[in-house]
Image 1 (tube, rainbow, N blue to C red):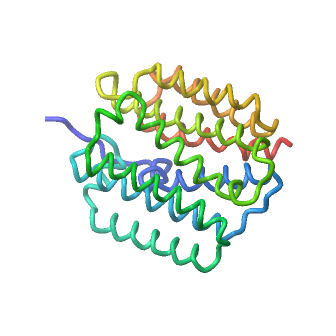
Image 2: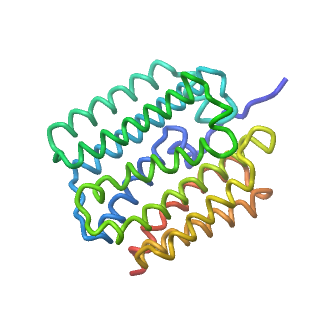
Length: 261
C-alpha cells in the first residue's frame, strides 16, 4: 500500500491552486510589452490572469478525472471536482465578459487565435487522447508556444516593427518549453516523462533566441534558464514538490531585472 503525504506546506498552495501560472503570465506580459514600449491595459492583464487560471484548473481537473493523482495539484482537483470546474467556469466567464467589454478589437482578434489553439490542444490531450503524437516533448512544446503567444497578445496587437520583439517571444516560448519539459522529467520519470534531450532542445531555443532579443529580455531569459538548469542539477537534494514550485518561481526573473535596472 502506497502512503500519500497530503500535508501541504504554505508555499505549495499557490501551485496546488494554479495561481503560479497566472502570476508568471502577467509578469512576462507586462515585461515584454514594457520593453517594446507598449502599455498593457489593466483589463488585458486581468483577462490573461483569469484565462490562464481557468485553463490550468480545467486541465488539472480533466487529468485527475482520467486517473492522474501522482501530484498534489491532481489529487486536490480529483477530490474537489465540482469546486474545481465551477471555479474555472466562473474565471473563464469573467474573462470573456471583461474582454468583450473592455479590450480593443486588435486584442480580441489575436486572443481568438490563441483560444482556438488552446481548444485544439485540449481536444488532442483530453478528447482524442493523441498521446503518441504529443509524446516525446511535443506536448511540452505545445504548452510553451501557446503560453508565450497568449502572453504576447499586446505585442501582436500594437508593437511594431515585428523584428524588434519576436526574438524575445521566441526565447520566452523556449523558456516555457524548458520549464514544462523539466517538470515532466522530475515528476513522471524516464519511463513516461519527456526525454532529457527535449529539455536540452528547449534550453537551446531559449538561449539562442535570447541573443536576438532586447538586452533586458535576454537577461531575464538567461537568468531563468540558468535557474532551471541549477534546479535540475540539484534535483537529487530537492523534493519533487520543492522542485516543482521553484521551477515556476525562477520564471519570475523579470521582477529581478526590474529591481536591478
